Length: 135
Image 1: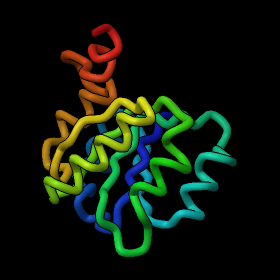
Image 2: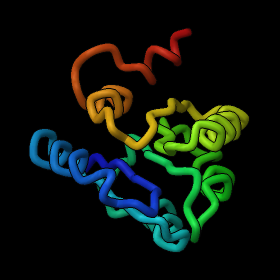
Image 3: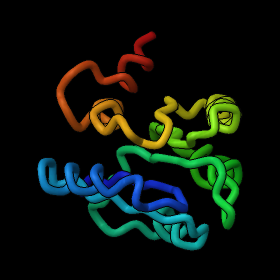
């Protein structure tokens, strides 16, 4: 099953994305801000699960987004959407992702669900992540 992992301390921001992805596309969305859960998710995946994208907030009180980048996302080529509403923090996080050559875009607050689904290749239209690879 295709999975989108959302690393954030505000799960409500993803309610509509969860509903649309699951109901319309059969894609599971997992939301957590727990480092142990993220580690389990990547190190012991459920058989058949494929992470197609990560939504990542930068200012979580219990977890550093930069730790998530370094520990979990840096070694993988999974596209990331930075969902922080803090412009400065989002840009710093995007720069860190770029340092690891992780494809990323910024979508404050995860409001534009169509952009996120398009970026992860879920819906039709130009796939921003795949287009970046061709540049």
